[in-house]
Image: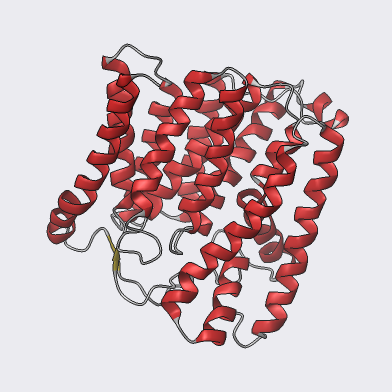
Length: 357
């Protein structure tokens, strides 16, 4: 590790600490509550007092500092990250500023951005590990649809699990550390370094988000992390074709399946629109169980992050040793599915129909 890298690390950490401590205090004071989550009655609200949603701004500006430093030092800049992380950050910021974009319009904007992203950067998946699906992927329009759908699930999954102290931040760390090491040990040092810098940025944010939250990511931050994870995953997959696609399915299972299961539950079981929020997601049910048990909402809030991410980490570790074996990863992903469904059923029964609203 050379001196320039150490300087960059110092800049990112120092800037983040300064930004969150001073600038955001000023911003929150004069933002007229535009960047304050004070709706404590909405289904996905599990904090007891208004909290700033400007954490995503700090992460984004730290990311810009990273890109600027790489540009000035004439190192590799990944413009696909810069352009689309910026666009999705802005899309989320519009929501944080309470400009109230309708869910359908927001979805349309997301899809439009993703279509441009996939086509312009040729983010196509050629091998899914499933033969009949690979044949469909030879058709350009189907390949475009498939990748956009995967990205859409990851971005919305990130947004969905945000709101609990440290849940998304820690989950993103686990995924990105994994991707960074994969690239590093396979000789993709530039990509590994870029992802590692983002890991540092998230760590600084977590100082203000876990265990006690004084900042939330907001939609701007969750969309930013979602698209960053999605781009990092597909770039890692393309750069390391020897790694099974099912390994990345395992790695992203929680983000992807939380959204998928929610859609299926709302459309086919509850007969309602999947675009509107409710409080029946697994992490929300776990929170209610913990509150019932210890009668402490603050502890229950960050216990959710600890429990879910600890279980996820324990399950991920064995898969690291089988990442190049598609058959093992395929069957191992079924274990994730079984554990999720079993956990959801148990949690639903523990809560009871009256509380599961």
